[in-house]
Length: 146
Ligand SMILES: Nc1nc2c([nH]c(=O)n2[C@H]2C[C@H](O)[C@@H](COP(=O)(O)OP(=O)(O)OP(=O)(O)O)O2)c(=O)[nH]1
Image (tube, rainbow, N blue to C red; front, side, top):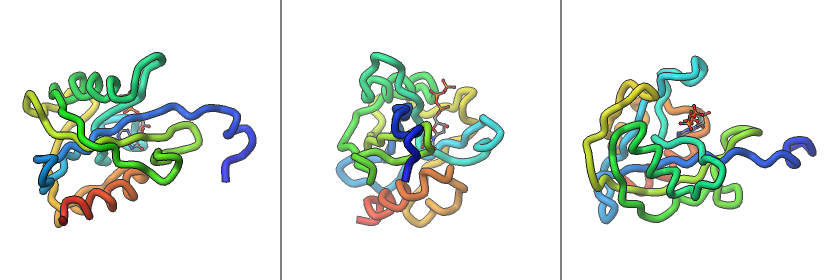
């Protein structure tokens, strides 16, 4: 349960891309390893970032993916989370996630990430995920297994 103070402060929206090899038949998921800050350095996440004021979430996702990995996306369905469709990160942050596939470019980490990996359902647990992503990854695992 959030405190009254937390309820009165809107949380910053983060968007994440669950990039799969094929939206019609997903078999692999693209994960990216963070370089900063020190608390999450070396942990793996869905590439994305914070939505800027006045920006639509999907627009932010396209912008972040060009900036971070130099790729363009074709977006699929949103992967709704348990908190009004969002995935809670912290008292300050909450995340929306869209399935996506690449429509241009090859994923090339910039300074926000130092590695990317395509993971199958069997290898999803081979990397340490940022804590807030663990429930998201659990849902993605079921999609990759279908
Ligand atoms: N991009 C992304 N961020 C996540 C995920 N899971 C998770 O807890 N986060 C957290 C990490 C950060 O605290 C925050 C996103 O911030 P960010 O540093 O990626 O955002 P940004 O690219 O806009 O960077 P900045 O301008 O704030 O430096 O959300 C995830 O799967 N993807």
